Length: 380
Ligand SMILES: [Fe+2]
Image 1 (cartoon, helix red, strand yellow):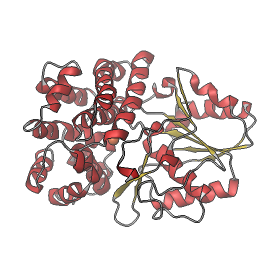
Image 2 (tube, protein in one colour):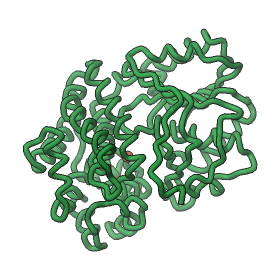
Image 3 (cartoon, protein in one colour):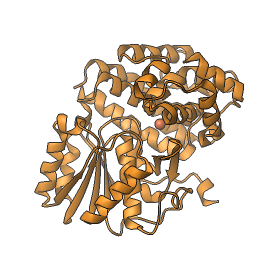
């Protein structure tokens, strides 16, 4: 019953200001494990900044790097082993949603060594965390909202299926929103991570579980993304645009935590599992056809478009396509998916997986299997 209630969890502390990464130098403790992705944090100079602040805090730091794509059970177990060896009192993750999700899951298992990923895969099955290590989440993209959410996605080692795990133990002790960390993002990553945030906003507003409070978060975020995304793509160092995208992602993280999302996410999870296509990229591709389908039986997509500052739904969908063209993103999934993974996947396989996704429960329109196949075929 408890898991059915829309409960809002917040980080104990959220710092949001350009330059707020300096908060790290005031951490109190002995040892910090720093979990990051592949090369981009070092290449942008941000890794050096983080290490400098941690050294000023006199924290012995151990780097756990190379987290890429959705964390699998194996990657999480490997991370837990490194944490257990080092015994940190802070676990700090700096990166996109996958890096932060890895840290959330690894912290839970580091603190509860008798449990496995399977044990914590039921909603709210993870015991409270924070007795051994505090969790600090620092997003370096503006999309997932994972820094403030109680969800972490794990990829099943065998099936490749993405499984969302829900726990209030995933809420960090500290979240740092420093938009200067995002000015090095490419136009492609800027566009598709923001499209993930926009999809959270739209699907939350259209969710069967929405209410007027979640609508407020979703609509404000929609306006902010419309006003600032094309600026951030054209002028990557425009800090005002970057801040607005980062705060919008945080707002949509709250909205979607309370309402869940819908069919766009269901397809994005399925196609990501089968092909490795980045989550936000998949959302961007499926946003127009799913929204058009939903609008046939629900007034909510049109309402969202108008509140976000578009004349009508068609103008919103045209804007999404313009953004994708300006960032060199394809509007069909097969070509980019071929670069990241399988070429042999069929429309039916993806549709079948998407139909089973938990996000389908809150989609505003009933989607039958054949409708799903049509949507996937239309954008192939
Ligand atoms: Fe998402």
